[in-house]
Amino acid sequence: MTVLLNRRSLLATGGLVLATATTGLLVPGRAHALAPTPSMRGGANNYRPGAPIVERIGRGGFWMSGTVRRAGDGAPLAGQRIQIWAHTTEGYESDPQSHGATLTDANGAFRLEMPQIIPAFGQPHAHLAYDSGEFKTVFLRPVMPSAKATSLEAHFVLEPA
Image (cartoon, rainbow, N blue to C red; front, side, top):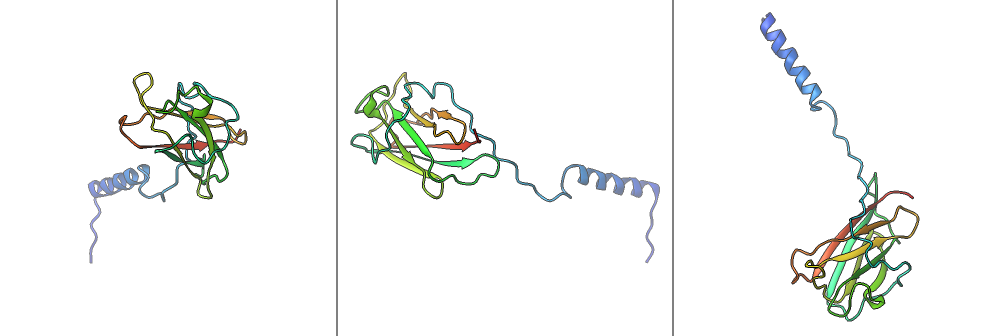
C-alpha cells in the first residue's frame, strides 16, 4: 500500500487538525460554574426582615415554588429560609399578613401556598428574598405570565457571604 503525501494534502490535513484542536473538539467537555443569581430591581420593595416561617399565607389557592442551589457546583441547599410576599386577593404586599417564609427541603426545593396574586403596578408579580446570612442576600421579583396563573416559580443560586 502506497501513501501519497504531497504539499497540498499535508497542508490540508494540518489545517484540519489545527482547526479541530482550537474549537475544543479534541478537549473533553467541562462543566461551567453556575453563576450566582443577581438581585432584581424592585425585589426588595416592602421587604420585612424576619417574616415568620408559616405553613401557608392566608387562605391559599396559589403556589409559589422554586429551588435554592450553591453557586459554582450547583449543589442543592437544604434548610435555607426563603421569604415570600405579594399583592394578593387578601392584602397588599406591604401588609404584614401578606408576608411569610418557608425552608428548603433536602433537595433545595421550596413550596408555599398563598392567596392568588393580582396585578400591582400593572403586573402580577411576587417578591422573594433569601436573607439568612450564610450566603449573600438576594431579592427576586418574578412576573407571572398571566394574571390567571395559579403558580409561579423562582430559582436562587447563592454565593457565600
